[in-house]
Structures are given as structure tokens and as C-alpha cells.
Length: 138
Image (cartoon, rainbow, N blue to C red; front, side, top):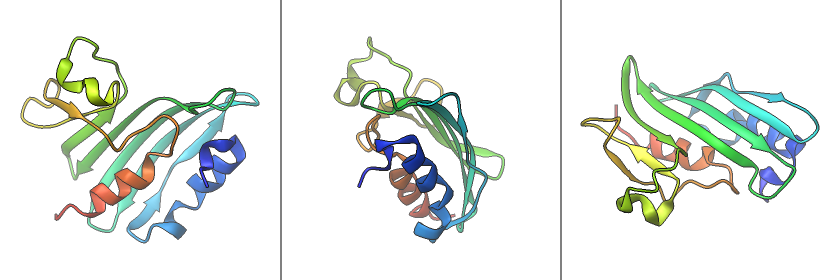
């Protein structure tokens, strides 16, 4: 079942993340409704390996593809490890396979981008991100 089918289902999914993902030790994620079919998601997830994921999503449940834009940042302490965003870069042919989904990596984290096949506007991205970060050794 896809929790992005309705705002209520997505809220339930977000607020029960620690119960479904044992690596999540703390969540400050908040779904802020912006009307009957719109919302924002923001906050932070802490994982058992000491990593943190900062989350920002703009959501609309009026049409298919409920996630309209996002930014996800992975941190270890004060060190930014990588981030994902949905800002289009149509002039970068290396990102065409997953346009507009991409990941920023060191070195030159702002400009070093790679495709992000695990991200979507139509499915929740948090399961993929939690699994990716839980697998990192710290």
C-alpha cells in the first residue's frame, strides 16, 4: 500500500516511522496541513548509527504524485555527508536518467551530482533513505 494515496495515510505513515523502522531512534517530523489537500513535511530523523536525516517535502494530494518537491540532508555530527533534492538540472545530461531526482556528493558537494534512481514523487522516499543511511558504517 502506498501511503501517498491520501494526506491522512501519509500522516499515519510519518508518525509511525519509528515503529516500522528499528534503526530510527528519534523523529521530529511534522506534517503541517496547508488546506484540505496540501501539506509540508519537515523535521529530522535520528538513526541508531548516529546519523541524522533532515527532511523537507512539499506535498499536494489534489493530483497524482503527491510529493511536489523535496530536500533530504544526511549528517554525521556537524559533517554533511550528502544531500538529495528535486531541483531540475535539465542541462546536465548525466542526470537525465532520473530527472529531476539527484544526489549531491563530496568532493565539491554543491556541484558533484549523480542520478538518484531510488527517489520518486509518487512513492514515499523515506524508506529508501532510512535503509541507505542505516547501512552506512559510522
